[in-house]
Image (cartoon, rainbow, N blue to C red):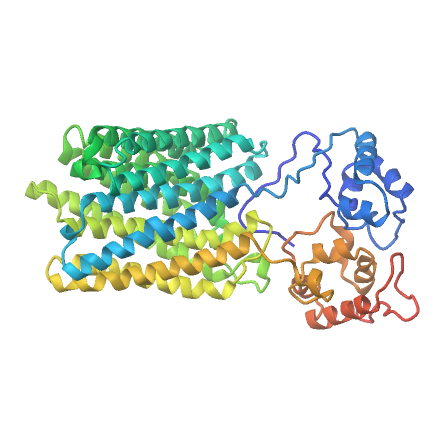
Length: 595
């Protein structure tokens, strides 16, 4: 039984330390010399399963009345390895970054943007909103939502896929603190520039620090992976993030007490292009090669197409950046075309966009419907890039920039249609994996998809429609409400997933099909012998149980009726079966005939 389908690797390196969350069986299997320590403390030999129960070391020590420190010391001496107090499988470094991203987008990002759209709809003009307020919204969404989400994924995912040590806690605290200082400082500066003129450069400097911190994290994790295309995309994202932060700092320093309203149209577009194409798309292309094949079911990526995508895309980003200082029409057109060609090459290289992986009823495998988010996101990526290229070509022919509404529709297709939709889809699959948990409310997956899809389609269509019919401005607030509702539901689902309630077994003492097998066997290790005797052979042969595996999935996977299996377990639990009892004990159910 697989704990995930996201290509998260577990690679052997030097002998890992022993930590309290490891199971007795895992330690005994990895370090045979430890078997004598467990036997001395009462762990029995069994012919029906591998030696050692699937019981964490801290539970074993408590159940046998011995000091955990003493047990760990004895095991360390027997195995010849170090002790680790932290559980390396926990990897919860992503949680504060994701939480910050959700709080910012619901308040300063999408929340503030919704208020702005209501004012635009009321006055019937994009020009009705001061440029400083638009910049504040955009920066909050990019620096406050997209960046923390990507960084959060990176700091938990990269150590698992590269087998490198986790980033130091102090570096992560500095990174998150710098990001929040940059976002909050920029927002306050945009809205009250004359009161706090110094906040512009100060917040820009904080974002440069954050960009350098992200480069340090990725460089440490990917030092030996530079030949892998996915790693080069991630490193390119970190490099472009620094360029983006430096340009942002320069713009804020130049604007001074006037604020972001003094930005030129070229400066504003450069910041968005560096953020979207330089940082975000490189990160998506890099991490996507590791995460999306498992969701799409398309197999290993085509390396040739991925290599071509890397070259085309980053050449295009460089050309767009150059267009703001030299040969604007030519470089902008070539840059947009190269980025679009890179997106097509990457989609071809990834495979699986036209198919859907076979569905599985196991909740820990993730909902098959989540693939629709990915397909929709990449539709909007290609559509947004097509609008971008068309706008550049028309502008080159006519010698004028495309209308503001056209640029807004293009930008929204890429930021919400592509980036936000992808974050919502991948987030509801990846974050439970990183937390070794299940998505809290899977029934929200479809409503969130419908809301974000409808809101984005309405927004892009309405903005384009305003070019001919100004009355279409009245539709924009409705699109914002749909998108904001989708983000609220997504945030609720993710917060409950990252900070779940305790397993019902711990509160009620009774098992359900949703009870985690790991929790059941940690609290009641004696039940393991019954499960093996009944015919649930998986329990007898694994070294540890995935934290997200449920009793219902375990029973169904072994060909048993989940409800009947849970009922038999509850009979044992209600009978308060004691430690050391075995199948066949008077008054307790024995092995079933079908076992």
